[in-house]
Length: 352
Ligand SMILES: [Zn+2]
Image (tube, rainbow, N blue to C red):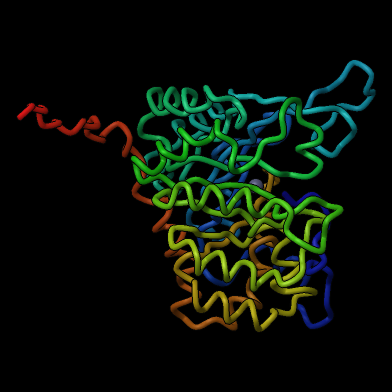
């Protein structure tokens, strides 16, 4: 969730002009990770979203709100607009899903076809959480394309949020993972691979892997490959490659700071990541991870161009477009259209 100036935005003499990045990537793409509601549950709305998508050469977007809201405390003079704006806590807030659904419903059908909304507004440590997902599918059956971004291990945000620490292998999420598997729906997870003070090994990765083993038929997308601000470990691309090799249903998105920190530090693509991306391009998609601020879509996605330029045409088409379309497209209405689950007719046991 970028809130800082991104290093690759700095102006270089060789660049045609400082406004050039506003046009976005030269490759048409799907933004597979975009928060359309911010930490105080406000949105600029669907028209603004489409306006900036068009301006940034983005054809489709995978959108969701934020499951938590930042408290404006009695003692804070300034109203916070971001989870890191001050020391006040966050709490789970479900109405953001309704804000997203209503934003979507107001759009014309041809514009709705460009938006893939996900459900995220539940408390991931509450074993009733599935009921929220079912309720939202009942209320807006034609809207949703999947579930996420579920915020699990998330450094400062975890520390700011009331209640038990959420994690990928929390039992409260198991019914949601099963629901997703039953209906072939994607689940986008934010799970830091480690904590901010343990940068020599991935402390929390086992929680994700336990889930991947327990739910081998659920299509998980590992948001920004488990990286977060100040969260990093050695051998990052080897770790991501091992995950992709071991868990065939796992996908990842390249979004937010994973790109600037390890994929293309200072705007120079790392050849190991090019190789990894070539190998698994059908399981990798790209996103901005912006929290509203749609006017930044162009520069956020344009920075991927130096990396995309080095990929084969097939791999580039996959990461820009096909993978996200494959994961998130074609899911609307799936749950309501599903046949009720049938219980096998057990043979009557007869005694001999
Ligand atoms: Zn995000």
